[in-house]
Amino acid sequence: MIIPYEALFAALAALGFAVIFNVPKKFLIFVAITAIIGFAVKSVLVQSGIGVELATLLGAIVIGSIGKVFSTIYKEPHQIITIASVIPMVPGIFAFKTIIALLDFVSAPVPSYELLAQATFYAAKTGFILAAIALGVAAPSLLKK
Amino acid sequence: MEKKELSIEELKQIADTSLLVGKTMLESGAEIYSVEETLSRLAQTFGCDKVNLSVLPQTIAMTLVSGNEFRTKMVHIGTLKPDMQRLSEIYKLTKNVCSACSPVDVLKQTKALISQNHQFSGYQKVFAAALACASFAALFKGTAAEFATAFIATFLAASLKKTLDAKEFNPLLSITLASLLATVCVGLFSSLGVLEDTNIALASSVLFLVPGVQLINTFEDIIKGHYLSGLARGLHGLLISFAIVFGIALGLKLLGSSV
Image (cartoon, rainbow over all chains, first blue to last red; front, side, top):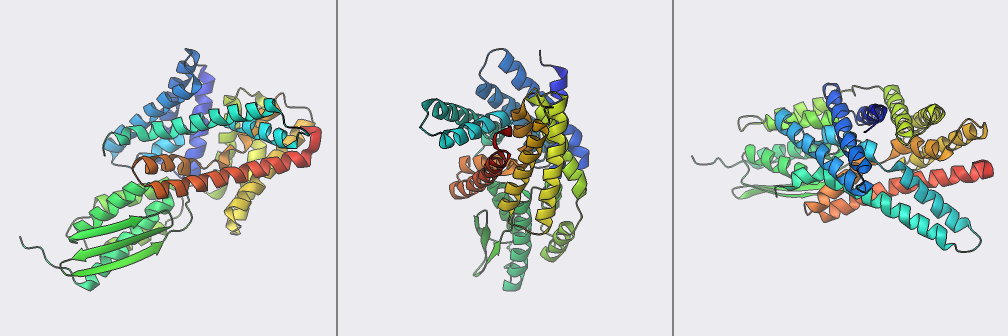
């Protein structure tokens, strides 16, 4: 089960970014709900044993699809709700671990394969998750030419 | 019905209006293809026979053709400042344009729309950034101490960035300095011994600087065949990420072994 408090913080993170991106006030509630749904899909899939990359892709596709429906109903660009909603999935910790491993690697007196492997591992995870987010959001609008 | 040929003066008005609309859309965070689509539709609604467009992240060039007349104009695009409210309004404005509308009126409406104030004040945005990053700390399974630390560090860093942006500092420099401040701030809290996992607070307090719009638009642009624009935006996003990393690295160096 996803812990409800995680959903609350996912919504708060998305809402914070919605304010930074100046999302119209009347759509803030959509951002919160979309973020919770996307994050819940991702969390449930991760807990069921699917890798975090694939889970993020599917979560982002759900958010992209909600965005598509939203843009059809309200005649607004989908970015208004999708960009802020996917933000809680950003792999901040992996990105940070990449940086730390790289900094340790260059400041070590001798080349360390272990640090290099760590940096590559976390960088690959960060890259794949970011690509999954971008691809997932774009997916519904790629159905047409 | 015979289509009326437009005069060179009318073509000029249409070019002025479409380019301002396109510039505003790009600066607010629209993707390349939706700008292309909107500008072509706009020019054709106003009666142009043919529209040739080149939309890049830094420039839009357009040639409007009507009968034997044509007019070409190019416009420079400023820095991207994601603004969904403006994007939504400009989108609505262009959807309502009909063939009976005058380009001059649409130009006036667009200018009025640009001069509108933001719905959120600067400090509301700073507070939102702090809350968002603190929520990230909670999502990364941090405790209340990490939540509070990320909130305070981000609040200070976002305030610094707001001040530097207002003084028109180089955006990359202001991002580096903001991430440096956030890192040092978290480091100071960590040296007090209140944090269980410093990495969580460090990682979450710089996340408000992440170039979300660039990274997402990059992908959409590239897949839709706008390779050049997609790569240019991706590079912009990458540079911003490097600026964040540079700030963190400097901060950790300053803090020495205390983290």
